[in-house]
Image 1: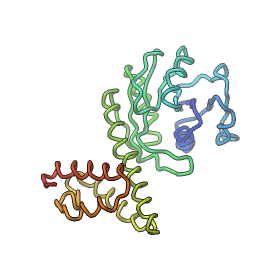
Image 2: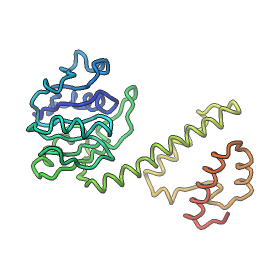
Image 3: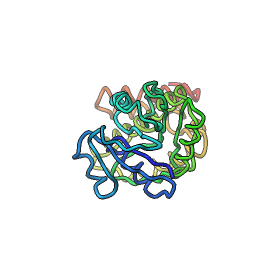
Image 4: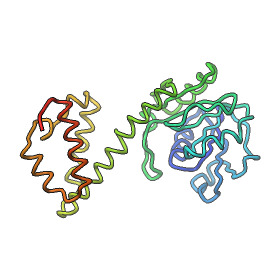
Length: 252
């Protein structure tokens, strides 16, 4: 059985604990966080600590803290014997410890939203073959999709994820705001959002693109622009329209 210590008490840390807790091949033996108040989720589930001096020996130390704090935490435990793996999509493989690694679940996490970890891709990286085997073993206890990804690939993947998730969600927020101005329930767009996502995962997004920009429907585009009372929204609409039309060869 692999033993794990989790550093951090945020969204990802809590989901990782929950996923590992359901596995018979992994035991989370401790959770560390600088603030005791943030450790409430783990009370009566697993031993916790706010002191680096009390960290228990483990096979893997998972660093699930903010990107800016990763190097500081790794530096503090760099002499530990186990694998020290951070969970960030954008931070390079560190060189502060002798067994540095990456264990990056590619998903958006919220504490109140359950996730099916078995479908979440986990990207692993290490300079040591034996540690890669251990990380693969660890990943497979909670997910069916474990990939060896280099720092350069992970950096690109994280950029793509920002477009696919964060920017897309911002467009959902804009759509919700547009609906609210006319007292239209955002729920009326739910089926469209789900179907668009479904098609994009079944085929190339380029192949399933629809709408006035692809069709070159300039009259509709002009009408939409006239409906927007914000210069920022007009700019976003225009930039995305131009991007679609450039991709599909339609004219402005």
